[in-house]
Amino acid sequence: MGDTGSLGLGGMLGVVAVAAKHEFALVIIGGLFVLEAVSVMMQVGWFKITRKLTGEGKRIFLMAPLHHHFQKKNWPETRVVARFWILSVLFALAGLATLKLR
Image 1 (cartoon, helix red, strand yellow):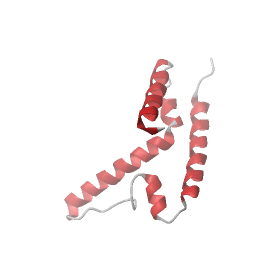
Image 2 (cartoon, one colour):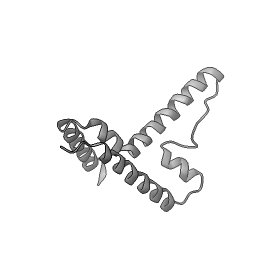
Image 3 (cartoon, rainbow, N blue to C red):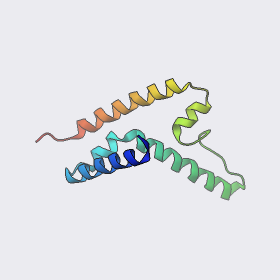
């Protein structure tokens, strides 16, 4: 799909969530994407903090974002993708469970 299509779809989902007043549900449904972004923020933040304190930066994960960490631990790509699919389904079900039926 590429960046153009994925950014367009993400923007559309954001607009629909705001229009329907279900922003929190969007964060839960897109929990895997949030998790990936937070893993990068944690890695960069921790590296900068430890570099300031000790002079040498330390890392939380072997590599960020999170899916690369698992690849560095010698998980096959198919296993990483399958586990992330499962997480996506669980996040989607949790997000849908938060919606109020009117």
